[in-house]
Structures are given as C-alpha cells and as structure tokens.
Image 1 (cartoon, rainbow, N blue to C red):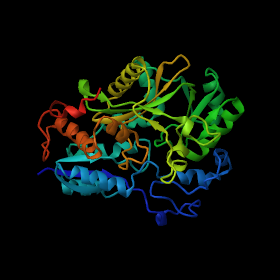
Image 2: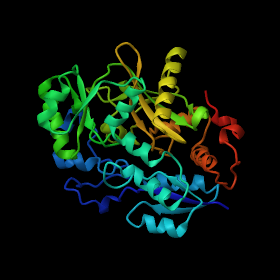
Image 3: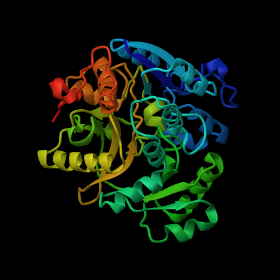
Image 4: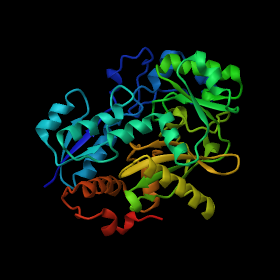
Length: 391
C-alpha cells in the first residue's frame, strides 16, 4: 500500500491568535465577524492592525478542508499528516512517504510556497503539484506577468513600486484607472475596493499604505473594465484540460461594492447564513469567447510550468480580449459545496466529485513520477478515467 504524506498549513484556532484586532476572535475560515449592515465603505475606517490581522492566515487551510483531503486520499493509500512547520524536514525524512500531496502555502518569505516541494526534492521524495520554481514565480505577480508578456500572452500593462519615491516614475506610462496590490500575496490578501485608483492622489495614498503595511513591493497595473472569469485546470501537457469556466457575478456583491473579487468578497461578505451568489458555472458565454479564454488559460498554465492542477484568473479588456490576471498553482479546495471555491465548483460542473478531484491530482502526480498508488493505474489518469477529459 502506498504511503501518502499530506503536507499542509492549518489555520490557527481563534484562541491561538494574539492579534491586536482579535477581539471577538476569528472564524475557522479566517474571517473576522462584521455586522451584517456594515457597508463596503466601512473598510476605509478599519485600523491598520485590523486590516492586516484579517488576512494574516487567509492562505492556510481549515481543519475541515485538511480532513476532507485526508479522507479522499485514504482511498489510494495510507495517509500520514505532515504539517509544514519547523519540524517538517525531519518528520518527512523519518516518514519517507512514497509521495507527498502538497497543499502547504508556507510560513514566511517570497519563496514560501516552494519550501515543501524543495524539501521533498532534497530528500528525493515525489510530490504533487508544481515545482519550487513555478511556485515562486507565480507568487511574484510581476515576474509572472513578465513571463506571460514575453510569450505573447495578454496581461494588463503594469509597473512595480518598491518605494513610494519611485511610484511617479514607474507609473507615468500607465493609464488610469490603476489597480494596486501586494506583489507576493495570495488569497486576495491586501486586496480591497480601496485598491482601485481613479486618480494619482489616491494611487499614492493606497500604494503607500500597502508598502508600509505589507512590507513588500506593490504591483501597479491598468484596470480592465470587462467581465472576470476564473478557470480551473487539471492535468499535464497536452492532456491538461480547462474545466467548466466560472464567471464572476459581481451583481451579488453588496450595494456600493466595486466589481472586484477581493478579500471582503471571499471572506467577509460571503457568509454561511447568507452566501454570495458570486460564481456562475458554467459561465454563460459564447462558444467563441469560451474557446478564447480556454486558449489563454492553457497557454499560461504551460508557459509557467504548472503541473497537475491550478487556477487561473482571467479578465476581459475594453475590446473583449481575455487577459491573464494571476496564476495560482496552489488553488483553494474547500470541500463544502455551499462554499465558493473555484476548483471544486468547476469539477462538480464537470461531474467530478470532491474526492475524485483530490485523487485525480495525486494520480496525475504519481503517473508523472512512476509512483504506484492503491487504486491508480500506472499510465496517465486521463487514459483510464474518461470523466477527467472535460471539454
């Protein structure tokens, strides 16, 4: 029987947080409670400590998600949990799993998402998902966009501000409105309605806020006015497939909110008792637009070296051309169908259940590396599981 290591980072429990903004505690999904009547503009009144504390652990997984992944993987072998903390290297060396299923986002640094796979490579242990280079590349929004642009894949024009003094020079060739965001974050950390800048004064104020409070450079890019989509990809090489496209239904956001799928839309306004109807899947678009979005998605997936699965965000420009916004090779995988989680949502639309989605990712990884699983065929999963060949 295959021994499968599950590498993860778990969100801390509410009583474990020592944030100055922790009054009332955090929810399991990382949100802080907010009054139902609180308008979107309220975010401008939050203290710096509150803003930073709200999203500190947004990338990590809840105990519910970790348990669901473990349950799915247990059908393919014996699963051992390997929390990706400071003891991870030694526990990995002692456990010596046949393969590691990696969903760990990492602790600190611009290469944090690459730590687990790099350690696996050091010990010669196969793992799922993209390699350390791709994970580091995709966490750097500017390097990602440079790679896309070099290969002729549409992406909004951009600049990087490493200090406020250079903002004017780096942004003068860009056209308003502009959108700013931290360079090395995921899960919409640091992204709110305030990041849309329609004038230079606001641009300088919001960029300065992000520079000071996220301690990293800021990406400044031209804001695209068109519809937004997010695309789940499963597989490798020529067999990589875009699952049913998810369209963003921004009309479901609270009155006054901008058409942005930011931190508030993901973690604050979307509540179990009043969920946002933010995802439309499959997207109701023309076959021509669908083909165009799928083409740019797969181009980005392959050019950036993604493996097994990923989520790619796409937005239309003023001419209706799909542009790649971001690429996430460690996609969110919330198990509850009531939650807005793109990859599981797209998989369900393709007739793929949660367990099968998790197992498929591991099977693709195992097939790449010649690892035999409990019920996995030695060849590519796509050849023996027609359900994965989604158009």
